[in-house]
Each structure stands twice: as C-alpha cells, then as structure tokens.
Length: 351
Image (cartoon, rainbow, N blue to C red; front, side, top):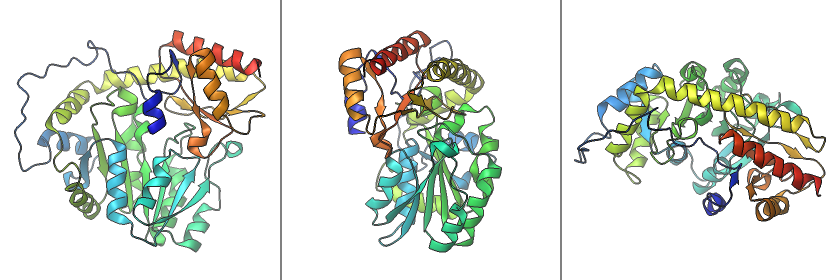
C-alpha cells in the first residue's frame, strides 16, 4: 500500500489501478442535501443494512457494514485468530491476505495457485486442510491478482474440508461485483463457517466512499462488531447514504462495469496473444490480469524503467510473491489502455 499510494498519480498510462474510475454524474447523481451527521446508537442508517441483507438473502444479524473489504478482513482476523494459530493463505495473493494473520500472532502457510493450473488451488488442498487443521483459510474469488474465478462447485470441496476441521473459510469477493448475479455466486452459500467480504469500491468506482460489508454467521458478525468498537465504532452515515444511492442505480453501475471489463479485456487479450514473451491465464472476471514476463526473474526493475521512460505503470509481481509477473489493470479509458500497452510492448522489445 505504501508503494501504491506513492504511485497512484505517477503515470499518464496507469495500468496499475485496481478499481474503476468514479461513475459519471449522469449515471449516479449525487444529491445529498442536509446530510444527517447526528450520532446515534445504531451503526448506520437502517436501510443500508436492510437492503444489503435483502440483496444477499441473509438476516440483518448476519451482515456488518465495513469501511471496505480490507476493514472487514481485519475484523475477521482480529475476532478469530490467536497466537499459535495456523492460517492457510493463497499464493500469489494480495499482500493484505498473508500479512493480516501475522498481526494477531498466527503463522501463515501458503497454498499455491499457479498459472499452469489456471490459478485453481491444487487438488490436494482439502486433504492438506484435513491433515494440518488450520484455524482459517483465506482466499480471494475472483482471484486477486489473476482474475480467475472459482464456481461454487469448485469451492465446495474446500468448504467441506474447512468445516470438518472446525476452521473458518474467509473469502474476499470484492471483484465478484463484476457479475450481475453476484449474490447467487457468493461463497456464503457454502456453510455457516464461511465468511465473505466485499464492497462497491472496485467495480463501481466508489473507492473513497468505503461502502463495504462482512457477511457471516450471527455469532461471527457479533464478534467482529465488538472488535470494530476499537476502530471505527460507528459506520459513517454519509458513506451509507452514497451506498444506498449506488443500490438505487445498481443496474446501470453493473452494466458499466461489465461493459468496460469485457471491452478492455479484449484489448489486453489481443496484445498478449500477439507476443511470445508474455504468458497469462485470461481473466474470467474483474479488470485485473497477472501476466508473466518471460525471461524476467523479477519485474521490479523493468516496472521502474517502464514508468521512468514510458510514463506507464504496472504493479511488480513481487508484491504478490510472484516476482516474474506483473499485475495489469484495464479498467481505464480504452485509448489510454491501448497506448499504455503499446508502450509496454516497446519496452519489452527493447530488452
């Protein structure tokens, strides 16, 4: 995050942004007159909880509004893990996932998701869980950074194994919002031991609003809420109001997200498939991909040079524990995407 914040505005051709730009005013007009800033005993305007709970077909007691997905996962780890616990975490992974458990004294054991396997977890992972009995299993779906998506059928053996050993299966679903039927695809359907976290930050361009949520069993949500009393205490009403406005315009926001993802993914596919020095698994959802740059053991210096000489930014794979890769985001204007890819191509040709 230190690197990301330092580079957020550091390139004209920014292929590192992990979310969409904010929606245009005609798509989601903001008309917040006389905002209510009064502090109350409730966590947020009741409508926000009720409407999100209804959208995911869960009871109100099974949902907690959070300041984005990262906040939700912090609360899950804080309320679940203790020193000495073992946590299984996917690799490659968004850096937060393998780091958070260590803040609470847990040790992290990675399980691999490889390019050769389309970033599917290895078939022996359920057996490993049964043998090693972790306290928690953490993964993202769709996968950050590759965009690979696991169906509920694919996740079921993993969910069964975690349930059998009394573990928690925690799933980051922030890129699931690129599916119009996101609630039906949520891993929450796989059992009371499953918790999921998501937000409107990545798909709908509401990153600064921090409208997110945590869904799980009533007991787990109550435990997370108690830890939240040491952090944000109350959910910000203005954020909830913007979230409600997004729900009012959800169909239009989803159409925009899917259109941009589909059209720009085709642009990236054309670029990658025209080269023999780039390998990838085509993303199945979202606006991120994780190509491997052939013959580069570590892309960090290459990314620095790309920024300095070509005004183009990619995220080095070292941040995801896969140094020969880069995370390439494509949720930007198509003309900027095409030119950024052209500059990437010239940098690769010059190697």
